Length: 435
Image (cartoon, rainbow, N blue to C red; front, top):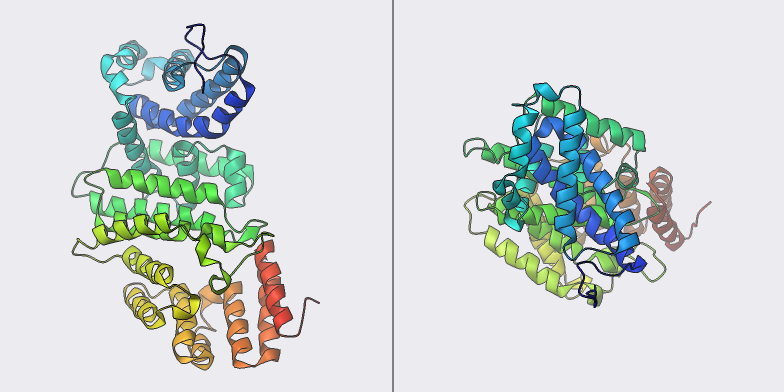
């Protein structure tokens, strides 16, 4: 953005510049402000902090479009948001019951130490503290994700609703429930003590993993990916890894896993936006620089003594990324990694994926035998990808009638328009298109 040539402190009014800030700056700044101000005023005022930060963003949008963007927009936002929170607290009927009182809050909020919290290092520390609160084990998983997106990610209720495929009212209830639970429990914004850290870090890892998967899977709607959710999960995981106590092998392996997947995002669809399976992807569109970064994080994670599920999943992603062509994939190596995963966590989804890999190692009949043992698993009873996998393996085995039966059932069960179109193409290849 250009400097004001008149020597003043603000840039000229510039609608495109303001629009750029709305899209890129405001969301980033919102999470930073909420983290710092929640740290100052306490989690029990998190709802008020979020409201005042939103009001500050709206004020900035109006003021900057009319009078130009300040030289230091972050400092402008920090000052306005802090004052709005203080003014709101002053007018609350419960002001005299604040801890310890409003009279002590104002000097605290204006103290030089508070300015340090708005430095990059202070902001990062505040965001890390808020991350542990948002992923507190007392909160339901869906509430953790909604609160993380709202408070740390700067997403509005409508954006979260679109990303999680729920109503705005559901998002509102989830975030309200989460805030109330944190306040009732007296949860503080702090990095847990050493004896609590492993369990709490596990909860944060799980929350970020699920957040990334919400974006990566896109099991409903017209999109293959919801990139904003994936990017936010990776950003927060990277922030987690910057803290010396949280830069554990599991944190690094989780970040590695996210980056391996992100490196293939551009190749998951063709020029018409149609979903592509890995065997059909143009590997020249994979981001090799991002793959190298993911590999570096995975290498660093190997320095630890423990192996997490993130190590094993990242190892599988690495094998895929290293294969020059789909036909050159080291399927036996992937099979061994799935065996290790299932030994640690006997998930039905892992077993389904293992059957797919086994079919590449030993043929479709072996994969079908493996899937036969999963047919009665309650976790997969209505899972459309079980039918999609059965259909694909029957197609490869030449059982076209069985293939059409399973592919049609998978198509009817999926809520994703892109997956439905892919399954229609698979049905076409069996000589039976969509009815």
